[in-house]
Image (cartoon, rainbow over all chains, first blue to last red):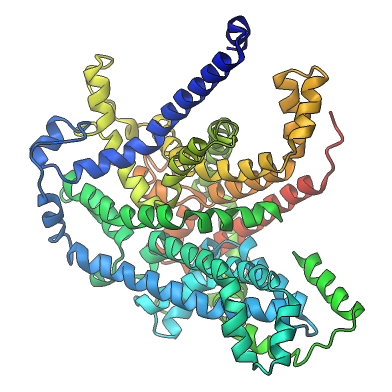
Length: 289
Length: 307
């Protein structure tokens, strides 16, 4: 490649060639990453015969919603599972924000003995995987009569969202200049007013990051939902997908599965495309530190 | 992060700033603390405690000392699944780096279109493992899958392959799916490292006549060491905890050969309902994971003095 550029000698031409090579390579990778999503989405709108005849076709003349209609008869119906997933995700997002915003504020703007120890304690939760404490969690939820309940699952998701969220919110509040707070205090603003009127607007991007991670993680979580929900009406979308994919009498309804995958993944992709800078910022927060 | 807390406290003390109502901060933290204590610390202690008991789901629990651990040592299926998890971790981490590193280098340029490609590569990361696993089950299924059709259409094969019926192809399918789903994540972490290197350093080496490869090996790689280690830690930990893809795609088969460590916990606690034994496996896995993290953090602390 380099020799080719060298022979061409003319700088603009070689630059253009390099650009072309970059775009071509990037496109090959893009096909690998994007085509599975596109294929699955396209097939969710194909009638069974068309999907079987040519699964790789992106467009089919026979557009139909029959796959989605068949998904209504899977278990309690896909909208029940979608509703459960929405409730769990909404509950996790709201509760995570309600708990982690004050905690981040407390760690950022107050000093009291034992504070750093508490911070390390909360951060340590990140080191120990929740998979290894599932067994006792099952018993604890049973004691509180929260097994097989959406609320119980929300409480668990919030707990495992907390270390990252508290870390994010502490950093977000650290970014608020002390002088600004002092000025407001001198003007007679109360603690609550300072938090609401000054701190929160500045920390809002951090809240968006926390909310987005809470949504995606709770929407997509599989293992805890599999263990803690036993009633068919309480299942979430990922559990429904697995039930469809394990088939009935050995026959898998691929069309219904496509429709289910679309319902499960499209909200995540849309949210990511809309709010991706908050997501990537959350990821790099760990890398930069 | 701990040091920064200390630093800011020292700063506050040094400047003699008044910290009115410092204990009010504790009140703000209290709800979060409640969650951590009840749903993390208590179950963590309970894991250890339960591992000394014969603990069925219903009926009496009985203290049996170290019997669970004795059983664990003699459990060949468990050792097999631990060995399999290690094998999977090594292979999948290598595969992810092999894809993610070139991707990071590829999109590390100040072009609008590079940002577009970054978004494309990252897209599968936000899809859950449940949806991704079932999606790849369909792609690879021999009857109506896309790959079977494309391969048949190209005349490469006559009959569709059934990858899930033997060990290595099944593992290959899972690794392919996981690379597809998570390479974008590692790419972003590595990209952060790449972008923290100033162009002057690279330019200086270029002027000194360093080749592309030696520039990468001697300058780029050592300078982005922290993000490489971070990506490594995150990939190794999440692979050691793999469950969804094996539960969904291979269902532990063929012949129980793809049962991961977390899968064994699931089987012991929630399929056989032997909660005590499940706790013992959990605790053993936890020790292994903490050890791996510790080793990796030691690596992170070391200065890169070797050439």
